[in-house]
Every structure is written in C-alpha cells, then in structure tokens.
Image (cartoon, rainbow, N blue to C red; front, side, top):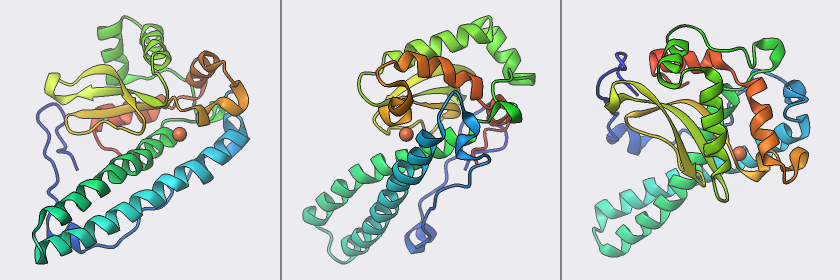
Length: 232
Ligand SMILES: [Fe+2]
C-alpha cells in the first residue's frame, strides 16, 4: 500500500503476523472486456490463452509459493537452522517469478482497453502534461518505449513508471522474465514482451505487435495510476 500523497517517499506495508496467518488465495482478475475486443490489434485467441493459461499458471504458482513460505516460516520458528533457511531461499525464487507474473499481468489487462472503450485515446491532465514536459510529445514516449521493448533479449516487460525518489518523474524501464517494479517505482503502464503475448498473431514480427498495442492502451487507467499512485 502506498501513501495517498504520491510525490514523496513510499510507505511500505509491513509483513507482520497478519500476513503469516492468512491463507487467502489470489485469483485471476475480472477483465473489463471480451477476449476478442482488442482485435485487430491483439487477437481474441491470444487473449484467451494468455489470460486463461499463462496468467492462471502464475496465479497458481504464486499461491503455492506463498503457502510454502508460510509453512517454512513456521518450521523456522520451531527449528532455526541453515537447512530451513535454504528451503525458504529456494521458495523465494518461485515467489519472485510467479508473484511478478501474477501482478504484471493484472497491470497489463487493466492498462488495455478496446478502441470502443477509449483504447488508444491520448492521456489528459497531469499525465499528459508530464509526458509533454519530459518527452516533448506522446509519440516520442511511444518511440522510446518501443525501443526499450525491442531491446529486451528473450522474455520481459517494459514499464512506464513514476519514480517517487526522483520527484515523481516518468521513466521507461525494462525488466527481464517476470521481474516487476516495486518500491518507489509506481507502474503507470506495463507492456508484455513475452512471445506468448504476440507470437500466435505476429510470429517473428514483434515490432509490429509493439506498434499495434498502442491502439489499445488504456491511457485513462495510466493517468489514474499516475495521479493517485494506487494500483488496483
Ligand atoms: Fe504474458
């Protein structure tokens, strides 16, 4: 959870006793649109597989890793030892991968919208002003982001972030695998550069996918994140 005033430092939630006690599982988020609603830019089949297979795998993997971490933490309390500590470190790899996959895709679905629901319409308000001030134009920001996306070797993501440690300025950052942005970096947009996000439709022409996705970017949601620093 972040402080309401999102221009200063970040107030991070503690992982206290309530975290250890809970067994609530995360689930796939509800989509605001049908699978085929982003066509022709992203096919319905891609969205269906991406959501119901790939994202579901991250959801399941995250829930499993959290449960294992809880069990091992209890074990560590009874038997403090390097052996249990090593098991915890092993689980943390899965926690990072599947937790990143779970949260990154939640951001992704929400920051996309069909053209009929405003997808691709340029941002307004504070976000539009910040983009103009830092990059000169939205087109320049898109070009920069596409360059970052094209530069990802293998699988990863590009994020447009608001950096609270740098006066709330925007920045475009790359992340590999399912690594995400945390702490002072507030995700404004998340763009998936994994092959599963485009290959069925664009095959090896990933630059075409990076070009097309801007037609369905939900800048309204991006502006909301930028202004409030709240991630749903
Ligand atoms: Fe993905």
